[in-house]
Image (cartoon, rainbow over all chains, first blue to last red; front, side):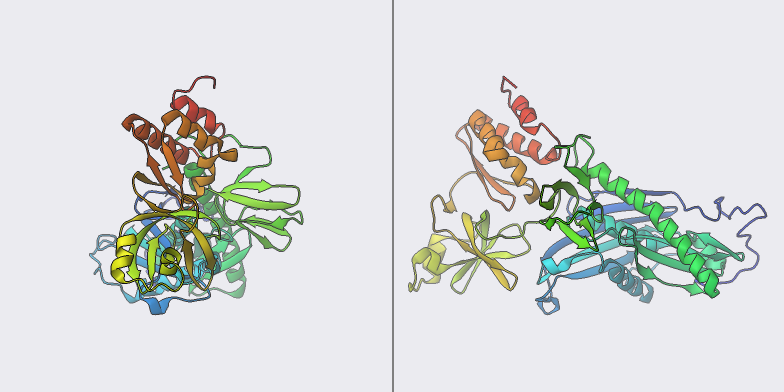
Length: 245
Length: 228
């Protein structure tokens, strides 16, 4: 992240980005709910080139026991990239980056889940990145939120996420891998659309205060687009007629 | 897509159900003046209250619920049973042998052993400890025979139906005895294999189509009942 290569054309004279998108356009997002039989809740997301599986277990017993909280349930998130998810083999052991992303996703989900109803229990979220293409934390957060809803964990709102950023001196929506590497800023945003609250906000790069505000607005617009796709995916599983398993 | 009633609406977590000042029942939360759903399900707004009937989720023990549990282990003077929840059901020896009795492990094992099924009532349940089970009462206690079926606990009310209509339909047309635990575990027993299989198929059908309307009619049709 944060590499600054000047020779990549991120935005042409017509305002079209390197992958053919407009500045305010997200990549193609598809979400499928309930893809894993053995998990209590699951989702699979394709966010551009990102392919991520989310599985949720719980609420269930906490092991090790000392982690349990008598006042509330706890949320545990593991974000993991498969060795084959990137062009050069990634060591399967959790890296610093994966540990950090696990933590930020956990903290982005915590305001939404109502675990105080389940004291002494844990909800485990497993996120497996099968293919990475920039913006995996946002895509993983989207999938995790759908999987939690699928597991029937009480939630105040779904959490949707999308990144915005700056490349070629222009504010853009949904930063891809190339723009992340060669661009000027990348800002992942997690958002609860019905409550109007931001649960995740990170910024890698430099923005002026005005650009920052604009970037947040653009990011929230992207989140709302993803939210519709999340809702449709859940509706398809639960509310369409016929088999729902 | 068909709504069960005009007032019932499909909702997802975060969906605003109403802004009217109504009493909050299950699976809803108040944010400012808006009442939001916290589950995937059907919103049910009555004249004074609002709730969401969930379509997914785990079983949370409530006092006086009838549950089916499987004994997992004996610890001290208690049996601990898997009641398909995030908590284990605790059955005290004094509930079986009477107050003051000092049952040995052998006596406890002879009465109820690991992997035995019991039909029990939730005697007490609070946030601080494991739910307490009781098997003192009519029809409660060890279940000797039958086929154990597990369905989502959220589908149990649908399987029972209004005033037990659904379960009575299935039982009468298949000659099977169906014991339903509120926790999503069901024991089906029948002398006839055919009846047993039919009852199992009907239960599966209810589970799969719990959110659809006219389910009793559909089940009747599947069971080959006339006069639908």
